[in-house]
Amino acid sequence: MNIDVVQTIIYSSMVGVTVLALVDVLSKEKQKPSVFLSGLLLLLLLNVLGELFFYSGAYQYAPALVGAQLPVRMLLGPALYLYAYACMSPNSAPSRRTYLIALTGPVLAILPMLPFVFGLSSAEKLALADPLTRNPEHYKFALFMCVGTMLVFVVFTGGYLAATLQLHRRHCLQLMDKFSSIERQSMAWFKVVLILWGLAWFMYSVEYVMVFFGWRWFGTGIVLPLFEAVVLIAFAHLALKQAVLDDSEKGKPNESETRATTLSEQKMAQISAKLKKVMFEDQMFMDEELSLNKLSNAIGISENHISETLSQHLQMNFFHFVNSYRIELAKTLLLTTDKLVSTIVYEVGFNSKSTFNTAFKKQTNLTPSAFKKQEKLVEHEKITN
Image (cartoon, rainbow, N blue to C red; front, side, top):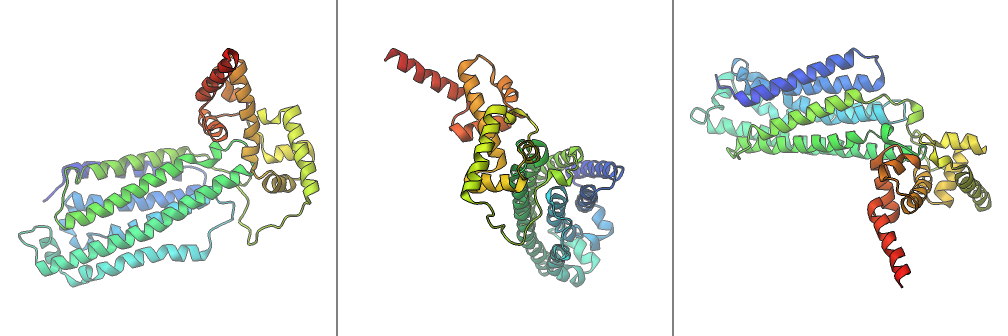
């Protein structure tokens, strides 16, 4: 029996990780995100078992099952999208059309496999594993299946990954309309893991085709499985840690039509003046958990009117409006005190140093340290001149 020891160990470990994660999810309260996460983990488990079936040599006992995981793999992109939708979208549920489109992936993957599945006997399929016994014509069936299925996989899954990234981007923009701090709700880790999944699956497709053509590189059979294992472990760990967001922590449901302006310029100018006043005098921006709802209750103006004023009159969202005041105070503290940046971050209302650094650089085009250094140089030049 031909056994690839390294890949068998790696994929066996991935099976263990996925099973443990699945057990953990199933033991928790059943909520929409956990249901979709369990479905995604189940598909990942079936996919990994398919790879283990081949590399462990078990395929020799049931050659007809070789490649059975490929249609399952086609569902991973849609499953990731649906998990993201359950976690981030304020809309109630995906449409039936969404599920039907997702199911076209496995159908498209099966079509190139038909000549291989039904055109060859079990003995002929086993013979393909050895260059000395394979039939050249039969090998063409295998190549057609391999290249065809992988092309479908790359295009289909790539489309779903792009759609999921767009969903995450829209989620973050919607959060910025309602909250001044979005670290917990934004699921920033998901974007990184999503890109890594895309890279892993693209590498898988390329290497899958390369092996069929007899092309190998020094990392064949080692680098990709290890990379897949790391991404799987990271995803499972972060997904299990992610708190379920309630509807108040998400954006607004998608609207079929763009909402028209309802306030006059004069009214928006009045609301703008009131917003600036409450920021200057009451320094509400220093509240780490300041939200549009809190601000609305504090000044007695509806959330819709505040949002409209910010977007139409001030040309910014709630997140950037509040953080602009935090940055201005941070600039003052940097120049007038000896406080550390790490202290100033929390003093001005931020609850994350990374968010502070990003916001500071966006507003000043400099890091906090570079800003302080530059301002001191300018002040020194004025004194010496």
